[in-house]
Length: 459
Image 1 (cartoon, rainbow, N blue to C red):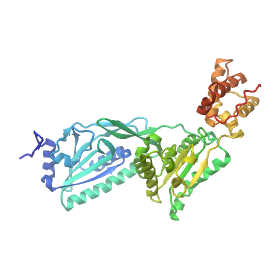
Image 2 (cartoon, rainbow, N blue to C red):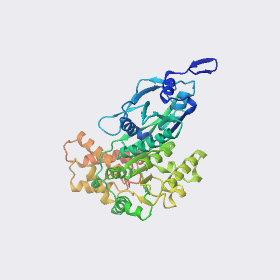
Image 3 (cartoon, one colour):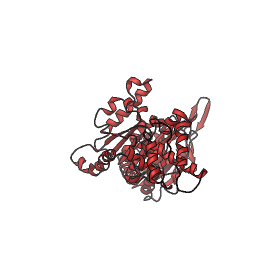
Image 4 (tube, rainbow, N blue to C red):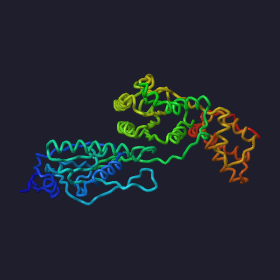
């Protein structure tokens, strides 16, 4: 005899999926025990691989697709068996194409239900998105068995083996990733974006020797000593603050570090993603060793006295609590960047364990400007005299300004005499346009706000 339920003035009967599930488990709905675990969204591929690997040892296990009339909420066994108005039933197997940084995307099951037996114990295992109110926060795996010791033992052992398989997989290991939030009237969710950053070599990082030495000691040196420090019961996590004017190489250096730490997963957090900060910390723990980069941290962690509303303080407290909540042996490197270090909340930077070292990225000196000019003008031929002239005229500019200057020099060269030998006329025109034609605002936009604009010089 099938169940019947009522909702308002409408009646509906138990779907076939519920009947099949009860028949397979051999008990009534009230005698079923379920257990569920939620995993980060980055583990979707590894969960599927783990489930397939563990379940293929039982050749009689059947996989069924699921259909829910409310796709913006996660599916549970309680919804299947409890007579929900949104009846879940069998449906086609649906897959997503997931970019994990390889040449081809990976196919990943959206949701599915496996029913099988192991050593005489019938079980059902469901894979579904984990979320509330239309916001996907992870991936759920739920196991249903007949209540009792044998079913409980199966659930415990299966989850232990699945977690081991997931920890050995980790599709995003060594990738550079960020989360993307999606919002629409019927709900939202988050997905993972893989960034394919160009490799940055050491010779392409143009910084003062003092800055480079501090960077090497606090990143490369620390990583080399991390295991030894852990054995001596020192914390394995570390926090760095990169500060300096815009365009001085903070982001460029982060790309360099991501290139030099191939076994670390890099998590990029931008200002518009601060609402996902809790999920980022969860991923940093799950994918460790990891490097977590929070750009423009002053937008999250500005001085409390400068905050405009209570929501900003909530985000600040969330950041501080998450940093403090990491275990001391967590292999997580934090890099926070800011153009306005004077506006950062003292609680973030006044205690080791959150931020251990501040590293200044100053405007390039004369030697730095010469190196940057050669770096960004490498496909142009510059005479020593012209190089000296460019260095002299760009006092007070950022590295980003020099990069744009060399691009414009190349353009003016092509429009003028052509050829690969850069002419002074092209340099004069580029500097005139960047420093004077657009006025003070243009200089600020291009990273030349502090330049000494005494007029262009004759060759």
